[in-house]
Figure (cartoon, rainbow, N blue to C red):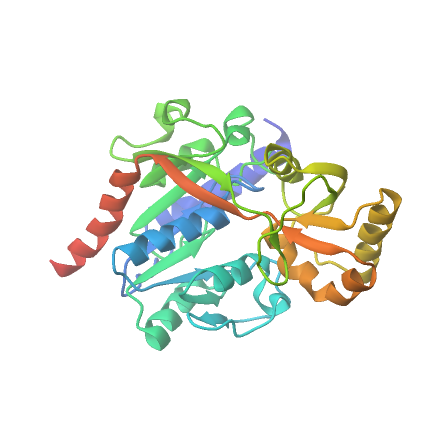
Length: 336
């Protein structure tokens, strides 16, 4: 192991040890807490999977809220992004992921680096009966009744710790998970048996792309034979390129920006210039990017460009009923 990864691993082991041995306080919320997370950096599909879990809870008749740090936001402290009925702040204040939750889910959405405090706010202001943590596996200060961890192929192929590899924690940390979810073609059988407990539920999920929609009105868009310029500021833009091609979209050019890109006028001019060079009038982007690029509608309109979005959904294809039962059982324990 590389020296830097070894030092990082030692720090992680010491931190986890403090929680495992109860030397650092773990705070319990007044309602069940379900965390969706991973042990690696980069996109594994947490955002659409959080939305899947919230919809499952709504189908069970629960009143959940989403709580997260709100990565990439310009605001500080706690921000109520949505009250469940209306989006209350800008994408700059919320961050791209929480803005997506606020726009797509009829539940309160709260940004707070202190998830325990965010959970208390959700309980106090909105009388919720469940908390869903987005990217919460490493935030151990708040007790989780159900820890769901997504595992993708890249995690299994190169299980090396940061900063050399992608892992935030060693593979053995998967033993803390109550539910392991294989994504991107990972099967339950692919996850090493010594990295999970005997009673952990293993499920499999796949991403599904929706219909292309206008980024400003959400109406469906038919491209016909028109080519597009594909733009993405996510961890793995190649996945977006592939999704477009699989959808039958003709891609004339691609622009990849850094993950959680805060788009500037200069970035938008790069997009416009590429469109002109390739004689394209359509820019296709991800939902995460669209919530930020929408702020440049005037520039796109003046350039004669339309901005379209390819939605991505997550669906559990193995273990769906078992997962639903596990979620339901969290509330049965409450009654007892």
